[in-house]
Image 1 (spheres, rainbow, N blue to C red):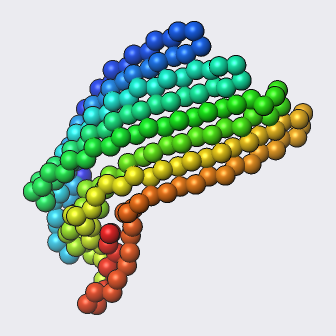
Image 2: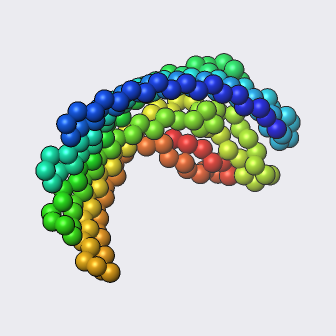
Image 3: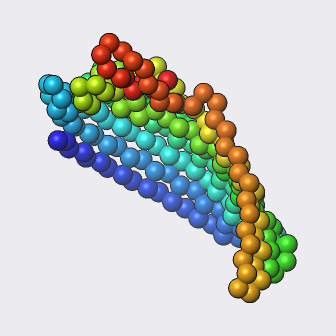
Length: 193
């Protein structure tokens, strides 16, 4: 049982010139969430989340090469009245996409993206929640955001009814948030590190 309220606002601007287009934007959101979790007893949780996102993007092409480069910033603030704690996270989010047409039938693409993964309030909450009599869940209030890097190289060839594609991708994250299980007293505990 719970309630969720949100307010969201966007401001966008674009400008085109020659073979290019520049776009910028800013977005603000505020979410208030109230929830009652019924377990052995009823636990009331309440949280507030403010997020501000700003970005700039350049899209264009030069002869056979098309490109898209974007950079963004993200500021998030969580307030958990249940935990009596504020969490503030900032993130830098660059991305790059390149497409090169080898000829009329084939092309090669290269993309890179970095995302900052922030822990959620559920992951940050140290409260023990019994899922059933043998299984429990508890978060970790010491979690930190981590960056995930994705690189992909993609090739395609199209000849009439024949289409051939192949791609290679790599993802890397240093110190990611991972779920693990351990035996504790008379139950299995799922937690995060």
